[in-house]
Image 1 (cartoon, rainbow, N blue to C red):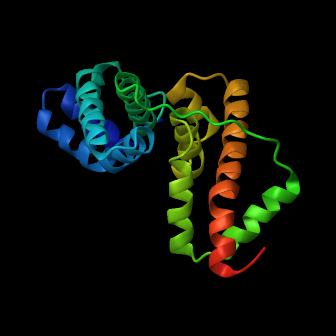
Image 2 (tube, rainbow, N blue to C red):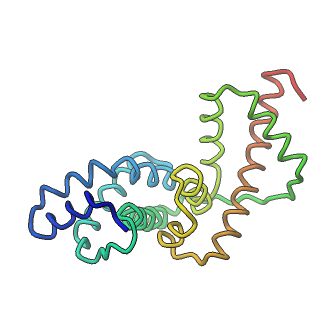
Image 3 (cartoon, one colour):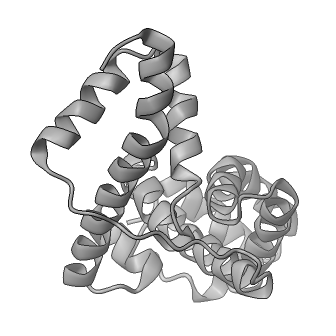
Amino acid sequence: MTTNKDQLIINKVLKGDANAFAYLVDTYKDMVFSLAFKMTKKREEAEEVSQDTFIKAYKNLGKFKGDSKFSTWLYRIAYHASLDAIKKNKNHNNSFEINEITYNQIQSVDTILQGIERKERAKVMNDCLLKLPEEERSLIWMFYFDELSLREIIEVTSISEANLKVKLHRARKKLLAIVQENVEPELISHYGRK
């Protein structure tokens, strides 16, 4: 299922051409760093996680079977390396209680977000995403921003399909509550709307 080019590079690396691995690093470094940063919230930690990810991938490349995309396999390593980094630094304590969100409240948030310019909207969403607990933030990121399929997320996280759907649903609800709680008052005062 991996791309032909990736598989050719993997074969070169497995035959002893360590320099060929640089192609894989260049190709996937942004994806790995992005995930690590979204999960750890710290640039230095994300850089360490990225390095750890590629070291682990290099050492375990022989275990890659090719039955999934190389990017999915690498994403899984990055995801678990990020979780390990978070566990090491237990000062990340995100807890958030959620109230029921009605359809009208969701529509209200959508209307508010439509009023923001695109660049501003991206920053607002990023700030709100960072307020989610690590696991939920990474699931939202994988599904909506990295556009991984449910199957790929299951491969990365080892979460069952039913549990993943529930976690994604809850994460979306929390994100909407965070957007409503943090963005709406600011926008109402900025744009003069209710």
